[in-house]
Length: 305
Length: 307
Image (cartoon, rainbow over all chains, first blue to last red; front, side):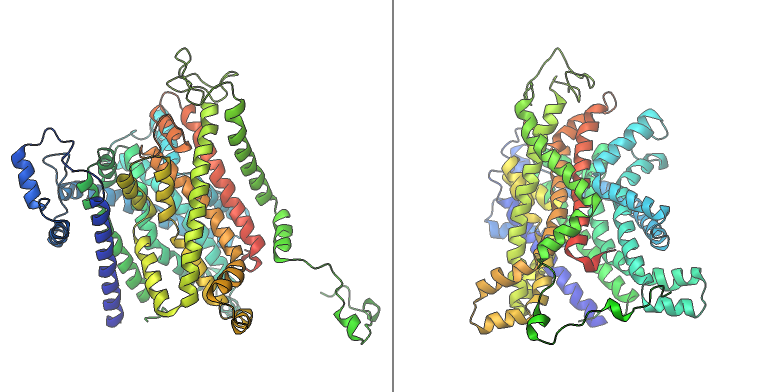
């Protein structure tokens, strides 16, 4: 157990190191000087920045400075905004993105799993078809379309919710629904398949033969086994939800990390992009690591090789 | 239960001669013919295929036959709703949205198809080599895939676009070199199984080399799963392109793709909702078509997975 955790941890660190290095190489391969378009920047500031980030040194040394800064939790500064560091952006944007992402994931998991169970149990009847319809719709329609439609109908036309913004509970409803819809669709579909698979197993027949109630069979024997694939994908689902939030945050004008990242790309703020990618990589690797461990705790059959 | 018990006269005695025993009563059918038969009997898949074919044909034909060019501006007719002259209306520069949608379809489909083809080639080769050699090579190669997989595609694509600058070619390259991970995993899994089979061993015994075994035996035998995965990765490429263009990082103006059209439309959403409606409908319809066709293909090519 401990050995497995240590092994996973080492792999996670190795993965992280490679991704950070790749990001560094990518950003260094952009032709030109990050300050080239800056007319506003004072020579002293420039010298300060160059010294701090070692831009006056050879690239291999810059790499070590970059890594060292990361180890100390310094993700770098913006080259476009004088008083904005990546850490500031993370500190203000990440809690917002996290709230939005987790709400969307909660919606996705709860609705997705319930729909999947419903469809699996009521196979071939109208709830099943309804769930299949929802899941196909959710996979086929991009999040930005949902977001725009929600915005148009529920905010602009019906005026149930504010059109854009962030801060109150009402502003959270539409973005989290738009972001969570795809996840509902994906998980409902997966849960349905898995449920059908499990309900066809011999041990379900045994349970029926023992005279257990339908409820006990479905919840104790069915769902507990059928939910495993959902646990496996939930890590990467959460990660993709974070990326999906780039779009949703921009549509609803939410001051999260996605909005800052898109701004950074639009203004070619390379250091900002690099720092934010590094942060995303760390978050995602941490999440995958946790899912791995969680998976092992839930299902002892997982091989700890 | 048994309404019609079997009777003796339902059976036919065969001669014991070997010729009669070996006689094939039904016409021989191949895997592909069989799959095609199953696919044809699936109405949902056939309708999706029809819709996709229609979209492709319209994307090719409409920009030629339309009286408007996709970048032709008409300041006397801006932001007009759908009418007989402009079927999908006009945008804020007076451009005809109908022709822009189909010109956009060309760009979006081109990006999706080319990027997916490159994805498949890289993924099949990578997965094939990894699965065939196994052991340490496999472990290192699969760790590589895992590393690429850790960061979502869209983030890699954004980074590559930043490095290479935006444009039609860069978007294709960016999607192509980031999206092959799932294909590599799939092919590797298949090859790991298939390489144990007798016909591979027979071929090896007869002196076939690595290339021959991979290209003549292993890859043709995982074509089914590859095609299924392909059908699902085309809509995801369309989705990536649309999302990027929607965020304003996609292809440059005046070129139009479904994503940029949706983006333009979204800016006008509160005043002229039809400008978003049509591109969004086309994107959704195409993704729906590919997803349903993929489901149908999965049932047809791999009947064991049928649910």
